[in-house]
Amino acid sequence: MSKPLSDHDRKKQISVRGLAGVENVADLKQNFNRHLHFTLVKDRNVATRRDYYFALAHTVRDHLMGRWIRTQQHYYEKDPKRVYYISLEFYMGRALQNTMVNLALENACDEAMYQMGLDMEELEDMEEDAGLGNGGLGRLAACFLDSMASLGLAGYGYGIRYEFGIFNQKIVNGWQVEEADDWLRFGNPWEKARPEYMRPVHFYGKTEHHPDGVKWVDTQVVLALPYDTPIPGYRNNIVNTMRLWSAKAPCEFNLKDFNVGGYIQAVLDRNLAENISRVLYPNDNFFEGKELRLKQEYFVVSATLQDIIRRFKVSKFGSREIARTDFSKLPEKVAIQLNDTHPAMAIPELMRVLVDEEKLGWETAWDICVRTCAYTNHTVLPEALERWPVDLFAHLLPRHLEIVYEINRRHLERVAAKFPGDQDRLRRMSLIEEGGQKRINMAHLCIVGSHAVNGVAQIHSDILKATVFKDFYEMEPHKFQNKTNGITPRRWLVMCNPWAGRGHR
Image (cartoon, rainbow, N blue to C red; front, top):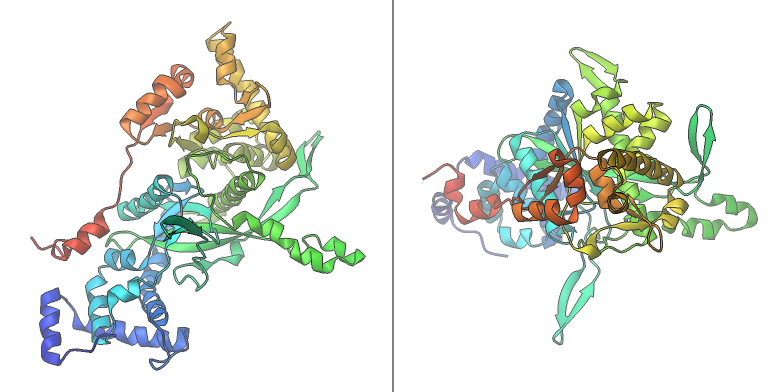
């Protein structure tokens, strides 16, 4: 810990750093000590460096809360079209420095810590990375959240709160060693649990067809508990939300075994449900057909769509709050972006909700679904494209398999009408691959069920149209477009040249 400077040296230091607002520094110091005392229950005699990091993080977080609440109030009052970005990965990294930069607090916090004899870089280094992604796909998702907040768009990120993110790498005796990323072991000061918005997610079971519709029964339920993280825009007072779902077993999970003396085992078996959000698969360009992975994909999609529809239904029109029941307005108020095929289950799940639960006709529901969903493709590697075995689908999500078959039947009717007699094209464009073990091609499902398909670079998008999805491009060329991957170099630039960030030339 560095020794505090004299008043003369401190004033010199302030002028060198270009700090404005000494009162702000005093407030930060006061709030820092308040959090150290009341939040962490420590004093300076026993506090560790990690305690100081948490005190600073809570102090900075305080500056987000009012902005966060006012942003959500504004969206409620104005009821804009909302963008829902669903991704199995969000590579957010560390939040402290990014939040200070976006709120223009970095100089004041640096000075406050300096006056207290603390080193800002040492405190920043205590933060665990929110490494809930493998690389490009997850980092793009994080960049989009930052951009939407900075542009003032009503954007929401939805994903999974993995207990273990991307593994840590160490070199031991010249060899790479991987160890688990237990990023939550000390707590996460940036998240807020929202148990009041917990949602049930169903698996397994069977379908029953009745005159009044289809029912999915005898299912196993897992609860999705949301945790919200604030996403601040760049110096515009807007704070959007990333909502990550954590899997929880319901209280009655397997407790029927209690009657035969299996209470202990029943409680231990809760892990089977909660494993859904346990760990991030360490690949974003290789398909592993594991049941747990399909569970993760449906888990995030089901919980998210329930949340989207809840928010859509409870809306404010002028001075009146009414329940919105006209789902024809859904595409006007909701945009669902599928980050690669991992959230592809959003398409059959939205159809299930609209047809089975909201009792819409198939054609009406399909039109709503297509106009609401859009798909980003990330790779043309054959080993990366998801093809789920039909048998696994039938076991885990029987109703969704029926819906996918119906989507495919109608899709192939349209293909046959446009390209009569071309049996080979029908085979290539089918959602169901028939050779050997039957598999569902999730990329084909995404294209058919979306109104827009994009690659992430111009050459990538051109390859999609010319090779991988050539048949689909020839049938519906208007769907295909390009969105070149962007990055957020703002933090790097501001920290390299703070004067530019303060408006100086």
